[in-house]
Image 1 (cartoon, one colour):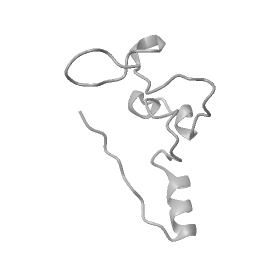
Image 2 (tube, rainbow, N blue to C red):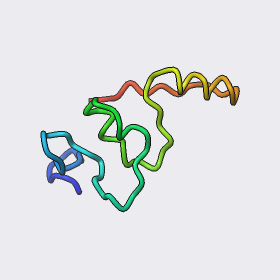
Image 3 (cartoon, rainbow, N blue to C red):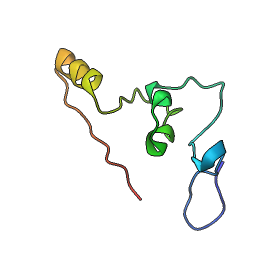
Length: 75
């Protein structure tokens, strides 16, 4: 669901003005659903196994010998 206009952006579908990419409760939420950041909550229903910045992400990367992909957001 997108607002009309030149730039495509998610429509406000939640309380408090947080713009969620999708609030479709039939889709499973990823671990970002437990975060407080509005930016991270936008991605709580993405089909990506996102991790918030913290020890769990670093431990998994080290255990699997994988690099960390850091998203700093955009505007």
